[in-house]
Image (cartoon, rainbow, N blue to C red; front, side, top):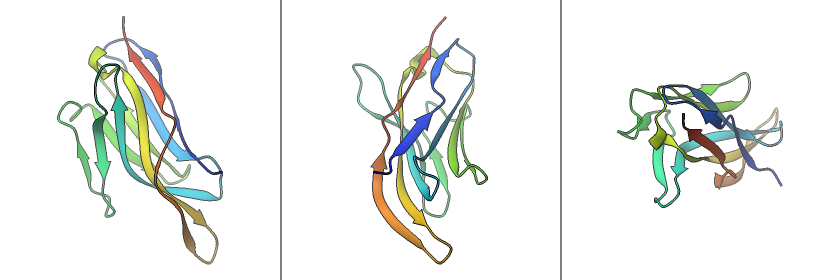
Length: 125
């Protein structure tokens, strides 16, 4: 079964940077990203950034100016560049997307509103 895969998490010091990526688990599939979310222990899941069908991006106030969502067409991934990280950014980060099957002739929907397994981001000294 094709899945969403997040990568790029890790441990970083406050003020540091990380770049998360989200892609389909198999190369014949592409994704249309709906957004990035995060879930910290003891807190509710939080929206980090959303992307509409026309490509418009909205960021949570808590990350605005520090995080940037982008599309890497060559790698068929969506990335979340996270700069000036703070301890309160510590969470498991999840991407949410529609998975598409790509052929030379057409694009087929495979799974809508799919979620990855998440990648841990820890910001600590």
